[in-house]
Length: 343
Image (tube, rainbow, N blue to C red; front, side):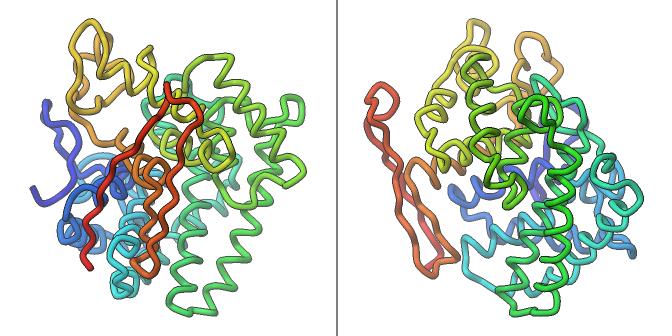
């Protein structure tokens, strides 16, 4: 194995970037895969086009170039989490120019359409319910990458880029709210869980005066529906959002649910209980050609470490321990975790 692949059961087995971006943090909490991902970053850099575009798969075999923004985000995400888990600033230094070129490529695409029509290939992939405008999902990745690049620039003290991309982020965050907020439903686009989760997960997108309203709309939707309706992109943002916003018990309830659609359904059903996460919420019984061993849904593993055990590595500068328990022992009565770092 020299790259993170997707389906093991069909003739595909490609280096899908979206899968790698969503599972990188969870993988590094569990395995010594630093060199593995450094190799993959080098492959992404070698595969990058002169206009800064990276592709959906690396090496580029299927998909498109430029990649769907939630797939191309692997370039920034892998770089950032390798730094988070090692404290090695040279990783950011090595790939900084390439990441900037990717963000500039996205910026040029954005200038053609604006955020309301931002290009996408896959939306919130494998969602139970897609939002009506999947451009919000790709816009989320674009803004997320810009914000992460600002953080990288601050670490490297690149004051020129701090100013440039902070101004860009402010422009994008204002536009995101302006074109996606729906005043008739007090939420984003169609008020779907995916739309509201991704808006709330982005810094400074939802105005302070509206944040509680949008959050309440999301919580009411989840409680009324009884389950999470999004896919691989929004589920990665969902659990940290709920824990940070005072709804940790609801996050636990969703994580412990065994009804369809849920993680628990994969492992507690009357067909075949999983030992690894599936490719779809309903791989069994309705998507039997899909994988029973797929890492794109594994982002919840990062939440286990960061928000249940509360282990924040902070680039090994000052490790922060903040476990989040529950007053309800039927939800959580203990947490046992261990992380082995390189120092």
